[in-house]
Length: 346
Ligand code: PAP
Image (cartoon, rainbow, N blue to C red):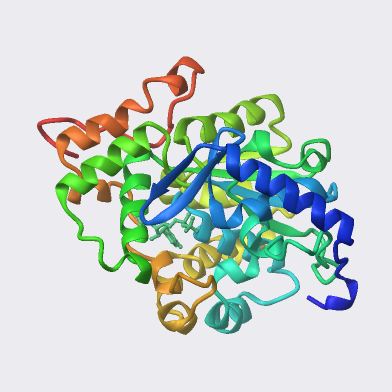
């Protein structure tokens, strides 16, 4: 990003933002979660260290109709979707071989598709970060709930790909990810602590949670605007990857041609974006795309049903109950997720 095109805030804007932030910080409910401070902002749990970024994003982002935004709760398939979106969109300008052997070898998917709140608006005094180097369509990501997205996104024709994952695997993935941070190395994992965090998850305390309202906001929007939002399940991508890739490519307005189908391009993309293939890249063994996270922690197991190895029956039941409340009332159910059979896990 060249700093010359980056617009810095004026002193007045800077003071206004700081004042807004200070006022908020004092009034918002606060919680500690895995050693990190969180504020409940506009109904979602926002890590305190990015609250300013979120406000700057909401205030200043100017969406373009061609933008593509990946939205998700953390640990639901973001890294995977970033690699797929990048590859599907760039497959004509860069060979799949180059993407796999050069791009993915040196860049983690989080560097290829950057997050509004973690990367782009990280400098609070840059109200207008320079995005002019981004090729069109611009690809972004966010964990922010739909209702808190900037109006400019909501009123534009930009498209959103939303990915969700069953609450049991999402919880277990979140658990391991948070305990992997250096800052949390003194936290001793125990059944009691896991029970406490399951309860927090079920009452909505997780990054960008509550789980059910995050999912529901995007799902409702998808029902109203199916051309603007593509709603995907992690489990569906695992089970029927080819059908899902075709759906993704159609949604991105770059469908696979007959020639590409004959050349097995879909299968090739599935392979180069697979968990195993990405996990083995040098950058994902040793690199760090985000300050406090080593890239290797974005690739743990990549399976459906791994919750079975960690959760007790009562924890699984509690997490599964999340699907019986607000989500069920609204008519939402997962297509590909099988609820646990207590007394005989699947
Ligand atoms: P983030 O929000 O921190 O970016 P996110 O990528 O959404 O995390 O989720 C990480 C999960 O996706 C991990 O699941 P696990 O803990 O159950 O293993 C990670 O292993 C999984 N994952 C990462 N890349 C892939 C991939 N290419 N295919 C399938 N799963 C993947």
